[in-house]
Length: 130
Image 1 (cartoon, helix red, strand yellow):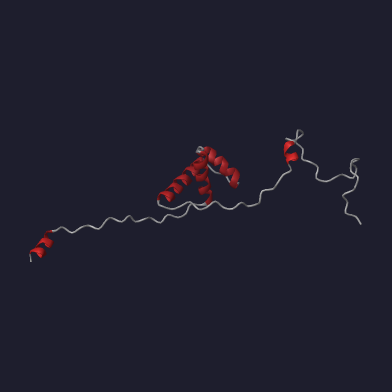
Image 2 (cartoon, rainbow, N blue to C red):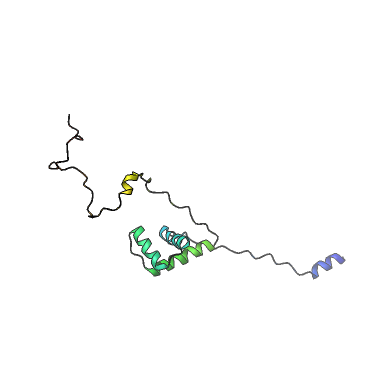
């Protein structure tokens, strides 16, 4: 009976505390983009706002960028992983190196897309007539 009395004197052991993870919603894509710009470029929030405005074509303030960054940081700190980058919308086009080496157009006008019938240099060789 000595063993039973010794067990009564021992204080019960508390189970280890379990951290309950709060379920945090995934931030919107625009917030993830702002976070990636900050991490990759180390840009200021004002510069991030300008970049996001150009990319997503909607007005963004510095304050909104600050809220987005905080939201994404909380999401990551909760143990979540950033989603993969979205695939490219279009395939990259190859460009003739001679065209690249030409430099910028000095006049600022766009290149003529079609020949005019009054052009003296136009010989009509690319017509599709039978």
